Amino acid sequence: MTNAAPALGDLPTWDLADLYAGTDDPRIKQDLDASEAQAKAFAEDWRGRLEAASGSDILKAIKAYEAIDETLSRIMSYAGLLHAGDLSDAARGRFAQDMGERATEIGTHVVFFELELNGLAEARMAALKQDPALGPYTVWLEQVSRWRPHQLAEDMETLLQEKASSGRSAWNRLFDETMADLRFPVDGSDLTSAEVLNMLSSPDRAKRKAAGEAVGKTLGANGRLFSQITNTLAKDKAVEDKWRHYARPISARNLANQVEDEVVDALVDAVKAAYPRLSHRYYALKAKWFGQEHLDYFDRNAPLPNSADRLIPWPEATQTVLEAYRGFSRKLADVAQPFFDNRWIDAPARPGKSPGAFAHPTVPSAHPYLLLNYRGRTRDVMTLAHELGHGVHQRLAADQGHFLAQTPLTLAETASVFGEMLTFQKLLADAPDQAAKRILLASKTEDMLNTVVRQIAMLQFELAVHDERRKGEIPAERLGEIWMQTQRDSLGPALRFDEGYTWFWAYIPHFIHSPFYVYAYAFGDCLVNALYAVYRDGEAGFAERYLAMLAAGGTKGHKELLAPFGLDASDPAFWARGLNVIAGFVDQLEAMDA
Image (cartoon, rainbow, N blue to C red; front, top):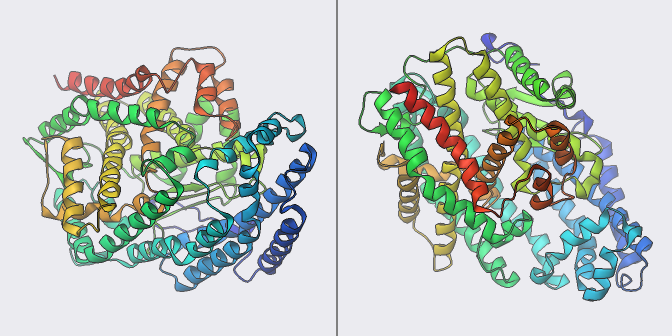
């Protein structure tokens, strides 16, 4: 444990020993060597023999392939988590790079397997998908076969895999380590990115302004590097997309998310159409609360005037979230409890640590880990509820096994956003008076706008950047223009920006690590809003069906998972139902202000 601030109590730091005891743990070398031997033997046993193999033989091959992948994933999880704990530590960076290169080298021996499966005659593959001998792995075969139109020859697939560590992964690492090393000067102190971004939520307007100016100035001073990283990765993606015959830059992400292009398009169109009645209306209201006609960009996440600035100690945050979970389902709380009983959470903010928050599932034979940068604000409590939701989801789905536990991103945000909603409703119910309820409601509305409106605006930025990059390199100034246009469109006329804000696109890691990931947040928030409406209506057996949905992991798509709740994401009314929840919150705030 470490005590980052006495007022916060003892903040937990994670213990990664459930994966490996340290970088010198002899099990790492043993697992790498064993995986390499298994991968070579797998290639000898199965290359060129799948056409004549029985269903039970194919099952045996899939399980052997899964075991190799799970061992390598355990190693990469450990290396990635260790590095995230201190991105400025060169030794950790080298270790993560070395493990990535070794895992890639081992993986090249088994590249052929999925390619040869997809090379089987359609009738043969169709028969395997119906073969009872394969059990639940027929679902995995279905998932693999979706990539069939986009796969390349084995030598090209092997080349792309081998070059990843000196290509995309190297640029990702450069971005991460650059961000970790940057310092943002504010009032005589050199702040990390996590510290300066957190200051944008300070109750002190002078600090917010100084933080906003420092972010713009520092990112702008490094703009050439961030522009080069963005252009290089966008071009790399465009080249691969061309060879794989994807119709649009976002198509590969949609395929991975097991969601149809038209469903994502319907979500985006619905959110964009709702900008005026959601974000435009709310930020005009917030500007009024601050006694202004316009709200400066650095005031967008400012606490409301007269809101309490109480630090919430870690034990209180823990109790609040667990009680909210338990109020919905005792089982949900029981699955969450070990994260606190054991050292599965790394909570303190510290220099070099990865900013933001995440939940990493690692592998089913271990357990997830959560990374936070906890500073004791209400928003941090909601972040804990969010990431814990991911962790619970990952634990419940672990019984599906390494391949089938993995949930598409569009559904991966379900438990996290639902956990936030449960926690918000508890905080709202416990609020002592109407003024406190108003502050909580406004905070939740802002979080939902950040999750839905802001993420779709980010998606619009990405779409424009990737489309434009196919025509040539994009100057840094043009990246700023695209960013500003998407921000003005989404946030509305009540927001006021200065020149420094044109660089705020540069710090967002999702653009670098996971192109087009961001719409999953909006998808998940609207989905949860619709789900929560069903729960609020008191439908019998909701909790049991909800937990069963989480436990299904990646074995079912969104249509099959939502059907028991009477919901259908392909129906435009589905998105309207989710967005109406946010609009209803703005309605309530306007009524309180009347």
